[in-house]
Image (cartoon, rainbow, N blue to C red; front, side):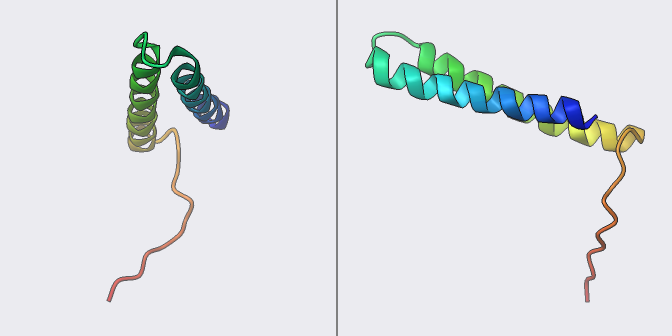
Amino acid sequence: MSFLIATAFILIGVSLACALYFMMHDRGATKRMVYSLITRVGLSIGLFLFILLAHRLGWMESSGIHLYTR
């Protein structure tokens, strides 16, 4: 499970780096930067939803940190 989450974080970082590269080299001539940022947002949302689903199905457990409310 941690390998999958780490891989998703790496892909999100690569997508962000690609967007930076396209911003510097394309100078607005193509939409590759926009597509790269859309991919990054999609991966981030997908990772968040996957973590929620994995916790709900019992594939992951919480860390045991308790929140105390008064």
